Length: 275
Image 1 (cartoon, helix red, strand yellow):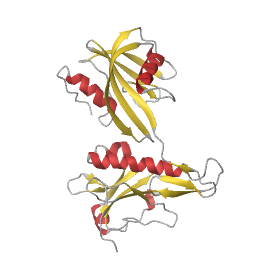
Image 2 (cartoon, helix red, strand yellow):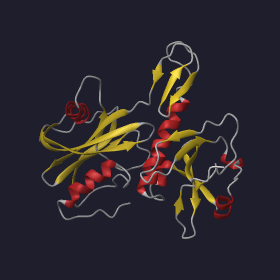
Image 3 (cartoon, rainbow, N blue to C red):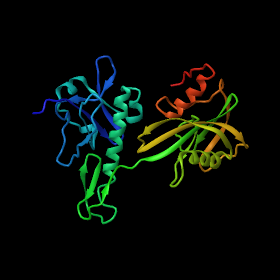
Image 4 (cartoon, rainbow, N blue to C red):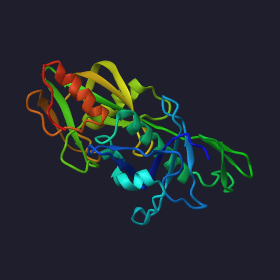
């Protein structure tokens, strides 16, 4: 039996199995063998190891209510199924990021069971590719690239509420990059489409994997140049300028939107106390 310990990222839909720790925190099970009962049809996927070389595997289970825990340490410690977004607040960053990658690959695996050309079954070729069993077509995981931008005008920032937001928080203008355009062109197009504003002094902020389900968010900051706000009502329900010391509810700390807003606020010596 292989006694090398492996991190097992076990999902039920978008909920992740986390092992309780004595101090009330959580971690991802790291065991010598698969810590729960699996079946012949369970597809256990190999994922790139952690930075320290610890192997990583992931798989889905159908019904967390009937899970059979086979690892004694996990059984004694107890476990919880926690949503991937919520796990950001329970795990070290490196484990949260790896959980996101696992979720993305499980989503890709589920949606590439059959060849899009001839309809034959697909089989794993490498850890991140599949090949059709009939025509040989190969597929790899696809990323949906999106931009997100903070637009400021003096001591005010433009915040918007998208119609697909599930709560009342305000965020930043964002949208998907289209075929044939640069990231910078995508920013200017999305700002014009959603607000009818023009911007200047566009600068890169950073990027963030966004595994909901398979995205890459690329962040920017820009200055207002001209125009009056006219919202694209099919996308946005609300939007306006807010002074730095009078902000509405803003995105949670796990998102790049919040990181960009916090960076802007830091220029005024302010640290947001929102979660």
